[in-house]
Length: 178
Image 1 (cartoon, rainbow, N blue to C red):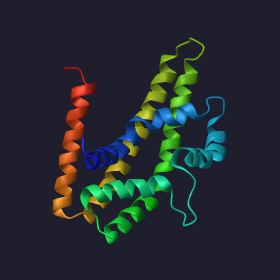
Image 2 (cartoon, one colour):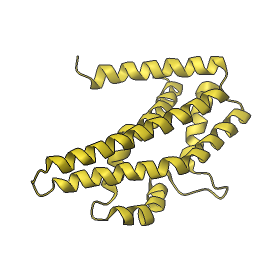
Image 3 (cartoon, rainbow, N blue to C red):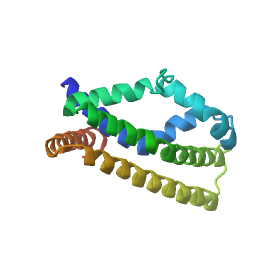
Image 4 (tube, rainbow, N blue to C red):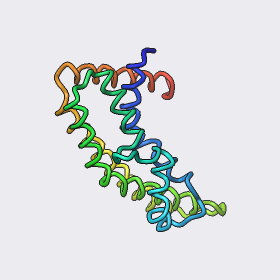
């Protein structure tokens, strides 16, 4: 597979990660701490651990790599790169609380059944809350995607759409029952 294809898959994966992997990543950080401790103490430290320390210019290496790969695949101009970077930085504060809520609710679900007891009403309430968390994440992901699409040329959008279709085909072939 070409390097550019892998980069675009990473872009699509990043958007999907908000939905699928976000819960697991946050829940695995430290099951012993409370949700409040996670929000206050671990969020900055976790971001540093997962995405690397901020460079002196304030940019995270993860963001630099992401934009570099996306830019290479889509042949982004420097102006487009700057616009996309600004979009991602602007939207990050909106996404962080949603990811934390998702992680907190996931932790509550795990703790609710940790002793082997099952309270259906409690689990249903938590599942309903988690459904709302995921819905909010989907809305924010689509908002970011729409903003990024506005920066792209029609040719770049078509190229990204081709990548998205290849990614979906890959997921269907490897992860969904036939």
